[in-house]
Image (cartoon, rainbow, N blue to C red; front, side, top):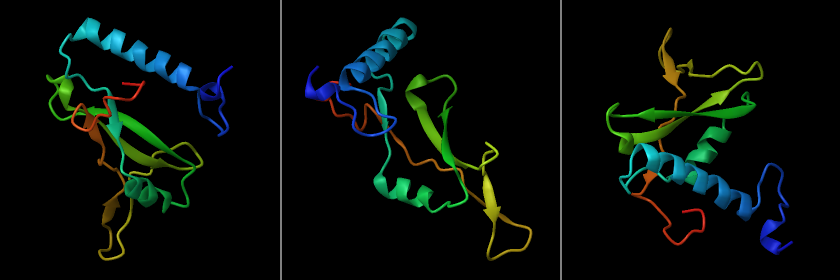
Length: 124
């Protein structure tokens, strides 16, 4: 076993498994669309992860796949939403400014790769 196969953090996988899983995605998507510009990954800025962590009443974050253009797979994106202890999406919270108004908690801040790719990554 090499050092790259050791997983010291909970819920992580080895580099070998990561390469296998991302290769599976590339093999699958190229059978549907041979265009080399298909989405490989999503970049999520750390400041946005920190913003989500402010939801102390959530137990997890759910990621939904979404598209801005339903006919163009290159517009694929991820939207994230906090999830409560009952496994329900927290899609909004009461506004502190307006009565009977709600502030959205649905985050759309991912940047798709190929626009933000690390082309040297073994996962790419």
